[in-house]
Image (cartoon, rainbow, N blue to C red; front, side, top):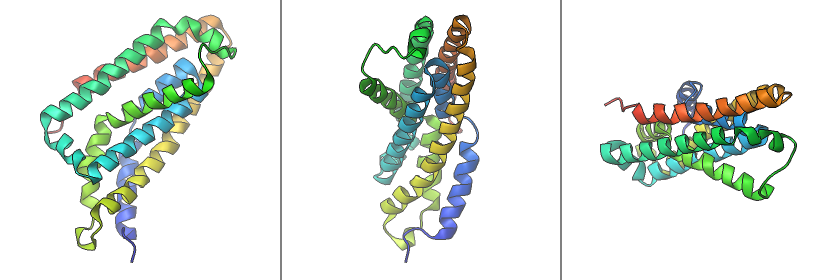
Length: 217
């Protein structure tokens, strides 16, 4: 007998799709990185986002997620940490927007592996502090668990793979689309600088939005 029934899996998939298709912090962050740094950074950021989101699933499965959702203080601390980091990354992108010409030509100040790892880590931090993800996994996910079937943590871990898979596809598509637009702007140094600045401003605005967005309760 499967741990998660097909009807619960399908119902949670539909619910997850409805939540994910509405652009939130992770989507806007991927778009911002795509505009500021290009396709490679966008894909790495999308990967980091889903890893961070799945860490939320693991936290919920072991009981930590419910603490974050129930405690206003803990929730606020997590939210502000993510918002502050978003603003920091946005400011950095805006300050270094003139350097995009070098990156477009392939010049990198650091090694490719380290740069990719840092980008993935940025995405992980944003994913794990995403207020929408906290709500989805801490408040919605447990409602689709069949307690009578047992193995509750395992059910949560399996169910959590559904929105993670959907998010990886949609975030990547958003990033590739944004990076394609960036390629057009890259034909002019001035336009490339403008799009880099726009990416930075997007992340700053996103951080401020996350900071001032309150809980439904």
